[in-house]
Amino acid sequence: MNDAIRFILNGEDISLSNLRPTETLLDFLRLNRHLRGTKEGCAEGDCGACTVLVGRLVDGALRYETVNACIRFVGSLNGAHVVTIEHLAAKDGTLHPVQQAMVDCHGSQCGFCTPGIVMSLYGLWLANEKPSRAEIEKALQGNLCRCTGYEPIVKAAEQVSLTRPSALFDPLETTRADIISRLWAMQTGETIVVDSGGERLIVPGSVTALAQILADETTATMVAGATDVGLWVTKQMRPLNPVVFINHLTELQTLAAGDDGITIGAGVTYTQAFAAIAAKIPSLGRLIDRIGGDQVRNMGTIGGNIANGSPIGDTPPPLIALGATVKLRSTAGQRAMPLEDFFIDYGKQARQRDEFVESVFVPYPAKDSHFSVYKITKRRDEDISAVLGAFHLTLDASGAVADIRIAFGGMAATPKRARTVEAELIGKPWTEETVLAARPAFDADFKPLTDWRATSEYRQLTAKNLLTRFYLETAGAPQELRRFEEIA
Image (cartoon, rainbow, N blue to C red; front, side, top):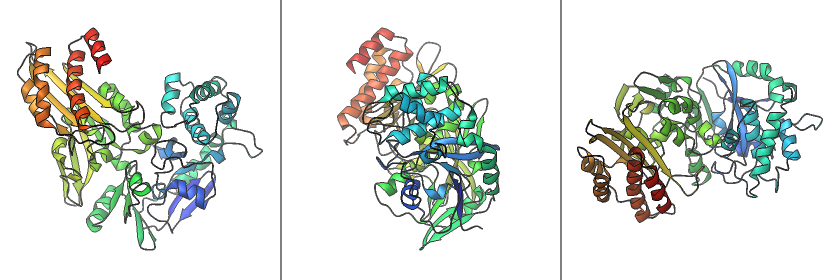
């Protein structure tokens, strides 16, 4: 057993044996290390002003991803390489090509968000030599510019990709072999326990160790990506003790695409899962592209989205509509259940105190079925759903509804199927008349709340309209769909 968190910060080895479990990387950088280029804008992973890179060894290679330092806990960084804006320029002051392109294209206005934007563009620069405009815009989804100066920023990204200089200009490329060697030396496989005045953080050495820790620690909070738990600390000021970090456990990061579906380990991030899901279930892939920005998708996990049990979590409704199965694990063993049975009530899941989500199996939609997901938000990118609907339809040879599964988020205390609506549709011809007749059944299935995202009336009408939209799309009625979208 070890008693220190070890990682590399820019070029320096860091070892911390006195660390609060909820200390954020942003606070550590600004207050402890006086690296103040990383800004606090929102403290909830929304604006991107705190963007840094975190590098990890993946299958022996070193991969860097953008993350939000404001909701990333330092305890989750063991064996990682953290890179801040201060590390980009050369020691003689020569700017990194990404920084110079921002200067040349006048990409900075007030300047507050600029370091985070530079780090997002730097992450793109490392990963993609010739990004398209769409890929550049996607890389900037998680960075909000209050001055609305995105066009010069996009031009900067295009310029630096067109005139890409030698890797000798890049601090991470010139030191890659050394960083890999140093990170390998930190991979001990031991369980880490750091005690700071009675507050403890635990980094399990294995999944078996995790199961035993949860059996022993009755008040433990598991943290994978912290995209939600981080807000418990930064916004709600909730004390968490002990905190068990699991984002490093490769045993939970397996992704297996089989003939009939995909098995996704609970530690697989949205970014890691995207390619496999988008290839087999395109509608679900498009949804993932709208979950936060790259920083959130690089941190957040599908397993965490399920385990958290939020009624507005984005992935449970489509997974329920597809008939997904969740696997739970504890020291007593493993058990599986339909995902829809996992959610019992608000904040309550069918999971014992010492159990954790190990994986989820997602069946592919049949080739002759129709599957769509609709995410309704106030702004298109990086926003929490007001309503999210998922529809999975199979027709028989006569054009009647053989089976349909409809699931919603934001309409009840849990992700929930619209079983009354389903019953109204099954066995009947898939026609506009059938759909219109089924719409009132939503009133029996859901009694949504009114909150600052949407009123109850808006949510109820939107759910009905999404059924109509799904019908128009599956019936191949583009003109009627366009008219419907104009009205909606």
